[in-house]
Length: 254
Ligand SMILES: *Cc1c(COP(=O)(O)O)cnc(C)c1O
Image (cartoon, helix red, strand yellow):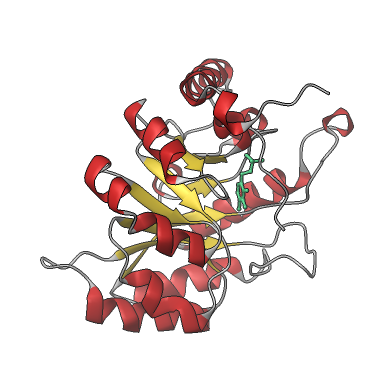
């Protein structure tokens, strides 16, 4: 069986390939889509600090983790702290209320992509007011939407997302709503046409822009992973979360 182990996987080559694909996809994207160049978040879950440092040295700055415990360990790892001073961490997994304080204290925390309830937003707002750096800077958040309506997935319903977005914008001064995010159903077969999760998220994007009178390019859209980040960009994604295509296969979580 042909399987590359982590040590053999060329992270720099993986990263350059993804960056090139993003560029190529942007060039052929419909000009009707008004959106900035997508931000690449390298998803480093299950990968050790050396892999993150390797990607950082190849120019990558934004990294995402979906387990709080891994984010806690990696963001405070002495080698990462010393060798990756400009690293920017994104939490892309579910955040339980009892972990908020742990997460908000972490160095180089850039964005929480998974705000999925008013209660969580309120708690984050209160917690950030106590730990935010001076001069004060709001905490960037995305509202996570469960576009595939699977019970096992986190996220608010597409229909309630605009009101949660508005709540954050108007009532929570310590948070900055910068966009929306979906994970979507796994393994969508593209021979069936465009991904319905992406269509659904783009609809929410329009509603939010209209309801809040915001230009399209000011609300970020986080959708697309290794197997479909190009399709997501074609539809208007401005944040892609890519793991496997940069770091190689992950061992199944034990
Ligand atoms: C693991 C993960 C990704 C990246 O998945 P790949 O298929 O390895 O690119 C993106 N987003 C979330 C929320 C994830 O948990």
